[in-house]
Image (cartoon, rainbow, N blue to C red; front, side, top):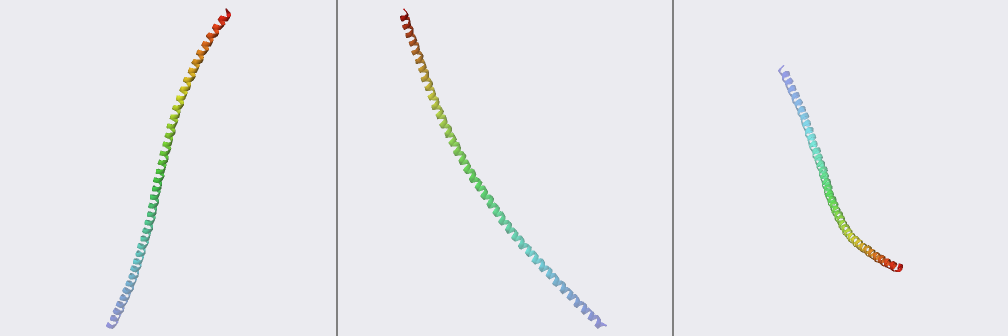
Length: 140
């Protein structure tokens, strides 16, 4: 009877050890899988972060280049507007000088024509007086 009990105890303990060994093996396999999965997750996250960083760097570079291009365009636009303004200003100054010259010429022409009219009026008056005198003399 003792023998049987010891044999059963031994069998039970042996079975317990085997069960524990199997459990330990399963635990080890699960931990190993968990570790592998977490390691893979970290690697995936690391790759995602690297890809994100590259995208952000590319976006930043593109936006920076866009800003530089816009700044250059604005500078060119400003130079063009400034040049156009100066050209327009010069054109206005030239036109003003031309208008002043025209006005001076018109004033001179008016004065000359006015003098010519006055001279013609005086000539006509003198002629009329001579004719009147001649007519009077001839009529007598």
